[in-house]
Image (tube, rainbow, N blue to C red):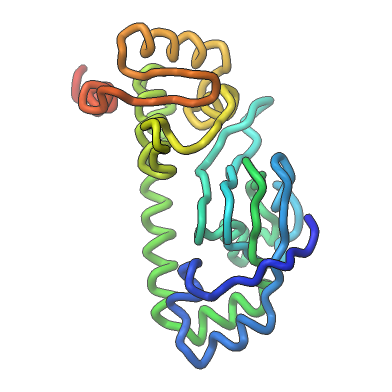
Length: 233
């Protein structure tokens, strides 16, 4: 990472927007902005926690080791927080890595300042608590799906989540160029299996694939695959 000349305008990340007006000059004076190239790491799994990051622009994948493979935990876009999973009193190390998917600018807040911000800004602390609760529920659901849902169903779920997160471009494709390996890591499957399942979905006209671009022409039909697999037993 290298320092960026880009200056945050304090209205993109949810910390800045929820901080009380009197606290914003503190954040403005102490934050540091960094720019990253595609494939460059924001944080590395196992490194000591030094602070948290907020995505100013670009896209980031948050991932962790899963045996000899990689599991993408989530994606972070404009305004999202990175590094919060390292907070707490037990570890002191980042339990995940984060890597830029495209040229990205992040805003860094040192740990001491971040903790002080939580104590001073009750509205921000409340919304962060709700974010943690939502993220925990989503993580538990994903772990259940990894164990019980067929790959094809998981892939359908992942593609719909990507569309919701990134939106679509002018051609109606998911507005992110993800490698097949990234899609496999997000779906919790091997590259070969995901490649085969994507061909199946394409032949069924549920998705349209053009290079790294993926379109979903029949979302209601694709969504049928995301129904809870346990309910069909």
